[in-house]
Length: 311
Image 1: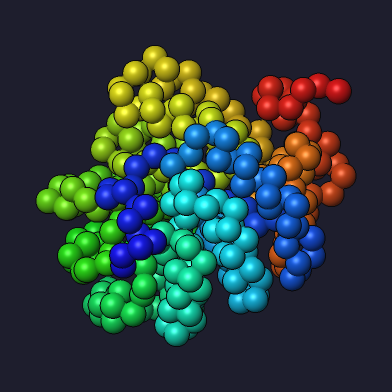
Image 2 (image 1 turned 90 degrees about the vertical axis):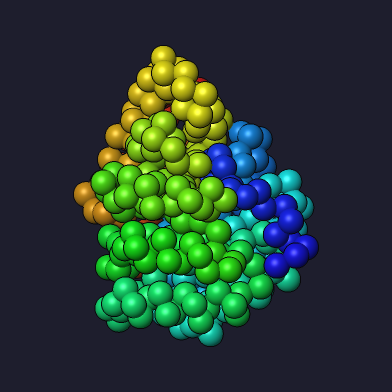
């Protein structure tokens, strides 16, 4: 874990956006849109970039496309910030394969949610991590996402995993602040282990409580807002926190609240980026992009929020 991971701060702090994957069709990257999106995000002063996560639609993408994305992103970022690559898979071997691809391309770390489908017990999950970590060529962040994987990295499992060489942090996306505070308490003796919050609606609260940062989807749209909120929370500037948190909640309600399915978050985010002229809003199946009616609503919200100028 030498060359690539030298660029990875311990613990990793700040805003690490989970980047959407710009697509032209089900197996073609929107290459021009990807370039614009990367520069748009990095211009906001973020502290890293996380690709092939939930917001990046990783489970819906072919291994060929995932490899192409890893290569393109790492080549463009060129070490300006750490690149974290999702390697979640139902196959142990494929997780290792993606991690090796990430290392070769120049990424700094990999990110893993529990393998979904089979209901593994906590002892089995821990054994899985003990077997996997030595096989990985990059530092590993755990990813707690029980609403999608149906499995939780329970607090004691995380504490035990933090002692495994090569496991350096966790992205916590359950939205359960009791669980989050349990992790905070258990990880006090692991100051280099990075604790990142997933939901941007909890960013301020989590950082004020001791989180190292956030992996928030809204930073695809307005990265500077989330960077400023993180900095305000880190320095305990509570009046600024209150103002910026209000804006974050407005974006959450306006952009993610359109539509009637759980996929509305992703559809709203990609639609907004398309309205802003950054990248295509095509989604990998089984999802489809917002139709004209929802797109008009998103466009209006972007204008009302001041993210886009009124035409």
